[in-house]
Amino acid sequence: MTNSVHFRKKVLKLQSLGESFIKLSKRFKTSTPTISRWKKEIEDYLHSYSYERPRRLACGFSAPGIKH
Image (cartoon, rainbow, N blue to C red; front, side, top):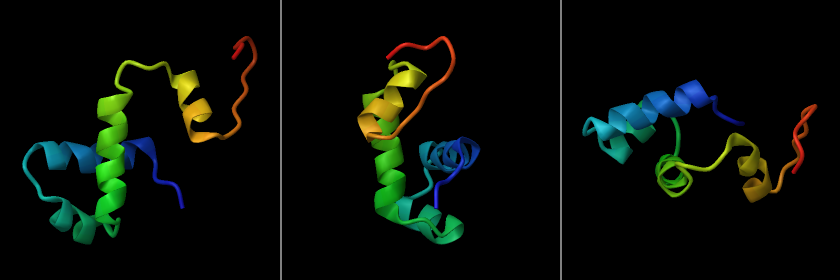
């Protein structure tokens, strides 16, 4: 199951305020490696364009007017 961007931001906001990965994992029923991966992805790709993400994740995406 995929988590919404809003959900991810909420979890990462709490983590940035000092909440531990383990507590967040239990509270939101999400694995600690998943939360860690979200954080790393944001740190590594903070300045990338939104259309670049599907390419990194090897999934399809197309929208009118956007050339990849």
